[in-house]
Length: 306
Image 1: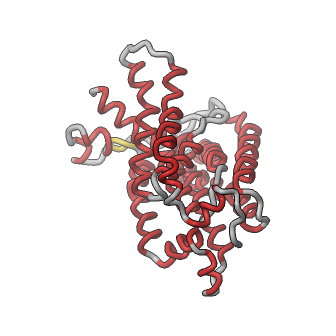
Image 2: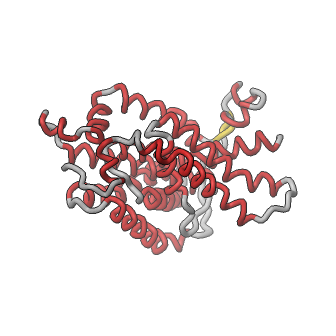
């Protein structure tokens, strides 16, 4: 396998957890709520998935548990921000540290435990295609599920009444109030849905990608997902490509090291975060101008309408 195929295939696998989190954060931000606790939702999802998979031997049960845990921890952020009018940035960070503490406490006994993880399943015929086959169709089931989740979320957001309500909550919340809709309920639903998807991303990380659990294993992927949503202009389809770009940056180091290149591993670990800063620096101002109106108020530190 060439290094290009190796890096791109690793990019799909490594980017899937970021993809789930990024799509979930897109839903939340479209409703006018930014969630810096996405990293915490991924952590909760990673540990819960690993715990359930270790006890049941069923990775699908683990994935559902991970998604539920991500939604549960994000509901704390939803209540604080939507119901109690807390600062969105402060609340998100508080949820992150809460999740970090809880997963460190309850996850210590699962370090080194073996589980039945998701395994690579090659799609018949498609997996044999040159170049494309190993990259897209020799992956685990959660990767294939993500191929469906992204267009589904796009369709719901931009082609259904429910999606219109979510987008209106982030663009002109007063219009919902005039027509008798509860802005608070819509925003809470969007934040919890985002946490559900972030938890699924964490589950992929622990029971499909690394097949292990260790403290703070998400290692900044949640923050990358939040940044990715911004320069993807709040579009699930653009998040798709961006997540794989960062996944490829994450997989570059192992691919080079496997071929005997002597490169400092710590320098390689920095690449995805440097890439994040560079893209934000280049596109930041332009993309912020395209943000939902209610989200702009958050960035400007102004109060958001209830």
